[in-house]
Amino acid sequence: MAEAIADTRRLYTKPQNLNDAYGPPSNFLEIDVSNPETVGVGRNRFTTYEIRLKTNLPIFKLKESRVRRRYSDFEWLRGELERESKFLHFKKVVVPPLPGKALFRQLPFRGDDGIFDDSFIEERRQGLEQFLNKVAGHPLAQNERCLHMFLQEESVDKNYTPSKIRQA
Image (cartoon, rainbow, N blue to C red):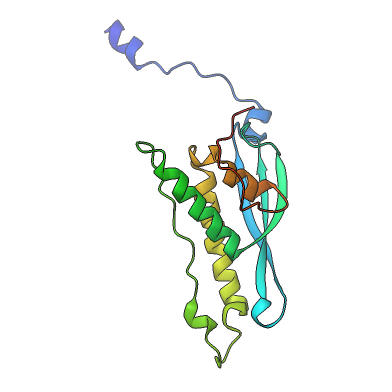
């Protein structure tokens, strides 16, 4: 009977203090896509999105960053991650899809603003935020130079040399 009591006793846990309960989590990565801005005119018109990152993960050089990117930059990032994942063979990263190109919305003579319609921009913003959070949350993708450049550098050098990031 004494054995049964010993086996069912609670495991010893350290008492939680206020900092444990309400302090920052041990590892966190917060990314949000917000503040869409449409710039340019005619065929040179496009929308950019602000990407804000906050983290305490040691793999990221900056703990907070803010950059602006357009849809074609997201397409570039997705292509780079897909290309890099093919070289991982056994450790393939499944790169999630981006929200669609909305080709129908780009046709002339529509009754709305097409891809510059506020509701479409908001829908796309949400899709881009989901995409980034899925990708950046993947431990193997976090090692990719292209992801770090996309999230933390002012401009994207599309002629960069692909490489892995080493943890600090």
